[in-house]
Image 1 (cartoon, protein in one colour):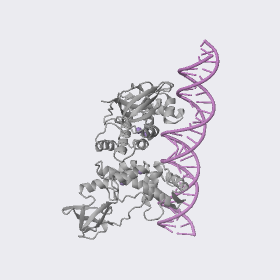
Image 2 (cartoon, helix red, strand yellow):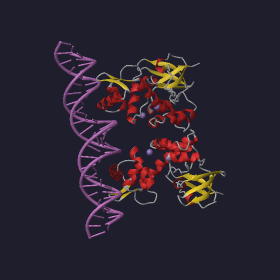
Image 3 (cartoon, rainbow over the protein chains, first blue to last red):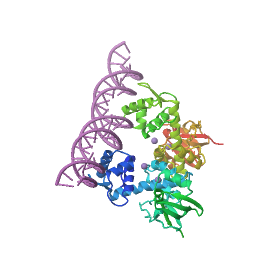
Image 4 (cartoon, rainbow over the protein chains, first blue to last red):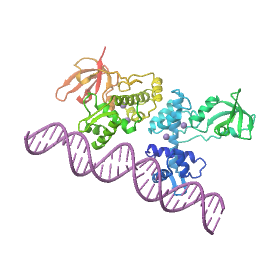
Length: 222
Length: 222
DNA sequence: ATAAAAATTTAGACAAATCTAAAAAAAATA
DNA sequence: TATTTTTTTTAGATTTGTCTAAATTTTTAT
Ligand SMILES: [Mn+2]
Ligand SMILES: [Mn+2]
Ligand SMILES: [Mn+2]
Ligand SMILES: [Mn+2]
């Protein structure tokens, strides 16, 4: 049922999955930006993925993953996140170093490799950035975490997930001593630029931009 | 100093390294057989690798790795064998299952990944088939193991290396209960087809074809 | 409703790696 | 040495994924 896909096809599928989160069709330009390829190249690939029944696609309208396409996407994400966990927990990489390496490892397709890796790691359910890891059947935990930007003042919350994979954001969080598990509390909210002043880890006071606060996902503490 | 090479270029380099063992130039046809590509394709690639100073190449003569090319080859082999060791010792794969997966993993190029993997594994010096693993500088232990085919009668020897990576040979050895560390002793040698009758592991008697005996490498026991 | 702007597709080209068939060179044989 | 066989290279196509520029469709604004 699962086809053999090229490195490139897999990256398109992952990008479509990421952009599709709200069910609305994914447009060509957004995909071309995400993948940093020309829009014309995206059109070509969408025709090909339609042929292979990975996406639904109508010219000038956009695309969505088919059920089968979604299964492929979840397997790629499973591989990516298991490797990230391995790199972080077993090899000692920092959480801002694992993503780029996992981008390559995720394309090694052996199913038994991934299932044995999963067992070796003890069936972890979240990667180093708090993202849930799909299981062998492609089931994934649906998180309903809150954005830090939406948390009221003086309410202690725990960081459980980071909404952006880039090394840049993780470097900034390292600097501020914020990681998965850190307890945060908003002290002030500045309406001018929506920036926040927060208390991190029970003591440190730091400033958080609107942009950053929209990429830190939290749950209520206690 | 080390270039970024494509998946394909790396496979050519590995094949050249393998065929080059005696210093003589590697010919186009042998390479095309090894890689299962048309000879014409090999010619094209050799021109390209010459351009990149990976090989010395003269039309109608053959090719050899440059010093730089050899460094590349050793790094690819390092990655391959470290992954084989990981798959076998950490994930529990059999020794006849690891090669094909390592063929893919070896092309993930991150240097820090491989060095951290090496450390995590405890700096192993041999892969599951007894092949030496090059170190970070590309140094590799030069083994002087004997072929089983060259061992005299009634001399106990220990299996230390298998000279062929294919799953076929490893399946046959599994069947005969021969693995790295097994003690062998030749009981008879049949001049008709150079086959051997041997005692394996101190008890089991089994027959070994000439071909097989030329792919089992041993050292004197005690 | 028209015109302007934005998004998307088509057309045509290119680089990498491959192939088959034909030509050329080297090696083996008579 | 001359001829045949083998090896290797060249020539010309093909596939995959990419690009730019032009054409087309859809959306937005006047
Ligand atoms: Mn990631
Ligand atoms: Mn990727
Ligand atoms: Mn191997
Ligand atoms: Mn390989």
